[in-house]
Amino acid sequence: MDSFSSSFNSFLNHFRASANSFLSQFEPLALLLAPLLTLLVARFLQSFLSVIHEKGLKATFLGFFMSFIKLIPGVKSYVDAEKQKVVDKLHSGSKSIREKWRTDLPTTGLGVGVIDEMKDEKSKDVDWQGKCSGTVYIGGSESEGHFSLINEACSMFAHTNPLHLDVFKSVARFEAEVVAMTAALLGSKEKASGGQVCGNMTSGGTESILLAVKTSRDYMKMKKGITKPEMIIAESAHSAYDKAAQYFNIKLRRVPVDKEFQADVKAIRQHINRNTILIVGSAPGFPHGIIDPIEELGKLAYSYGVCFHVDLCLGGFVLPFAHKLGYPIPSFDFTVMGVTSISVDVHKYGLAPKGTSVVLYRDHDIRKHQFVAVTEWSGGLYVSPTIAGSRPGGLIAGAWAAMMSLGQEGSKMPF
Ligand SMILES: *Cc1c(COP(=O)(O)O)cnc(C)c1O
View 1 (cartoon, rainbow, N blue to C red):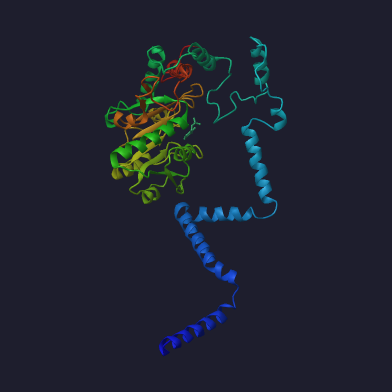
View 2 (view 1 turned 180 degrees about the vertical axis):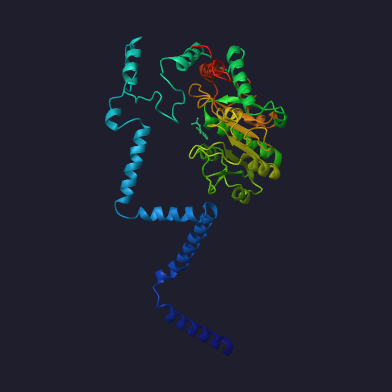
């Protein structure tokens, strides 16, 4: 061994010894954990910052505050108990009531006796007639007037299904007319609409919104190649957009409302990016009954080339009439540039039976992305316009009856 390598070896030994004596001050475990902890803290800060970026400072701190509060003994069990109550309600009543519910078909059928049992059950419901704003929209007694007219129309067509257009031509006509009459209230006959407005009946506001969102997503994929879609809505927009975002894998950006509780156009603009497919305005929104600035939102959507859905679920059968009566209502329909789709609930102020709504598009170029056509199925060619396959023709007939019996001015004929 030459003198260089022996002196190098002794240097190494010396270095090892002093390093060991330095490190022996620390627990080996701590040495292992320190970098891990640093990594965790960095991760936490990173996610905290990105949550702030996503939700805004206030919502983030509120969220952290709520998780902190839940650490206090008793609070979490209280919140859990309240949650359980809501879940119980969704299961219709407490466990003791549910235990009495039938779980098997009766061995011998009750025949018409079922009606008596149902009357008995109905008598236990809350007395809602004329008393449930936001739940039932038709006034008066359930056994007469507009109610019984709808009941008769529904039962007359209870066994029809517009999936089979060739068999049930009647309901095909009713659906087309309900859509056309609704569209006409919302500007379809004005020049500014482009004259191509089209749509379908659905089972309710939520389905209309789900379809409009899905259609916008696929339209924007075709038009701009967007594959990581995002949509921007005001905090006051209906929870159906959360549902749509979850169902259809779309990133949802909820933006706070302004001081007037209206959608904040400036804030929405700040969230638009190259993945934005859709912005939303409500006229009015369900939480506050406030109409968003539809014309400004339309301009914004048009200038960025993104879709714009106007949620007229609540206002679609109110605003057109208020406007005709001379109330100062800013434009809210297809006469507004940039509006690409509208949802409007016939089963709210259209005074139609529950389970009826309309989704409208500015033109067929957009709407065609709503349809699903399966050409290579062993059951044959299957084309279906909405989420359901078979659909209740009776409800379509009921909606047609509701609209036709009232007309624009209300009926002068006795029911
Ligand atoms: C009612 C309502 C909806 C949802 O409609 P459903 O018929 O309950 O599914 C969506 N948006 C607004 C503004 C509404 O008022």
